[in-house]
Image (cartoon, rainbow, N blue to C red; front, side):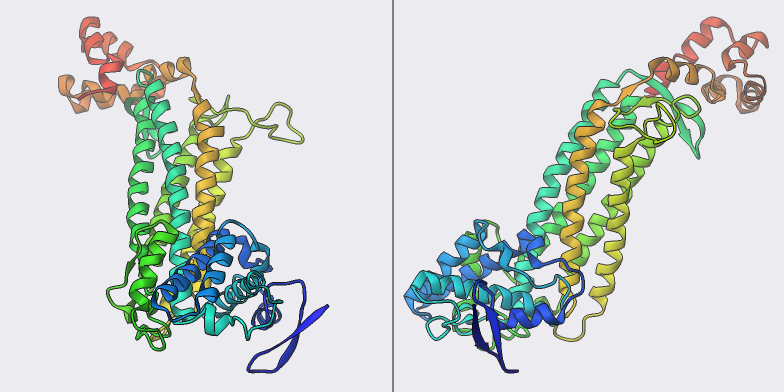
Length: 462
């Protein structure tokens, strides 16, 4: 069964069982690019429904849309926000038209569900129209950016929750290893003693600082251009609509959205997306470095550093018996690499916009949602399936410190840099510990060395 619908190009038949219409049909035919439908981003679907609901509530208050139509639109939007009909959001995430296809997909699904609520068949748009009613006082150019900001803000919030889990996991290990002395390294060479706890505490602080940055960037997305219509001038918007629509959106979406300071700038500007993308990039870079460190510290176990043991999650080789790989840090590394590539795409799309509109927001939104969601999953997996189960090889850590030429650094203030250098060089060449060499050469007594080379004191010089 099919129904006929008409647009400016002509008449087409639409499958009777779907809630979308002719505009969505054309988009399905035109944009066979990724095979990834809009429904793959439920945050965006929910946000589009929230914008449409807020608009209908504004019209209900203004009296600019028939009450029964406004209430039907509100009811349909609430169903979508509750998870219904997401499979009807079928247009490709990459599309021309600055999100027009996504907006029309939403208009048609909302309209046809509202028609059912009113007791009419789908497609009977004389009773409630996707453009004239669902999209009244709106344009794709204010609806899509507003919904996109809400969706990305929501994803960023989930990422921040996951980052808290990871931060706490590193902090817990930091406390657990607070008295575990180890050798620090610079340029992958022996440096001076520290504690393993300090190393993990530093990881925790990195995550916390980047969470602050992401939170600040996400907050900047709450300035929206709803009511600006095509280019920010508000053409065709009913008087009072912009103010009321944003007020209702704050309630519907449960986030403190605010009207843009300049609707024209907000319609063409994508600074909030670029800012958040940069914050996600920074976290990806630094999280990847942490994963590299974990893999290095756990390397071996016989021929590497072997200072820590990661939880054994799965067999690591189809040919080498007993091999276990650091699969969780490796997987998280790959998420981080993906985020770096996404940031490059977002930046390219941001600078490519011209004059009063950026046509490439669909790409930016797709990548930002993916990056935030994947980083959130990565943080939770790294915390729960790796970090919380990390253990230290206490004996190996002690031996590495005691035999390190780096201990000569602690003797500088007493015997001078030149003599300390000579001890360090001989230690490396002979394998004899610095302490034994200093006693042998009569430079210091055992009592003096007990104080100067006390490992816990050296690990906490402050």
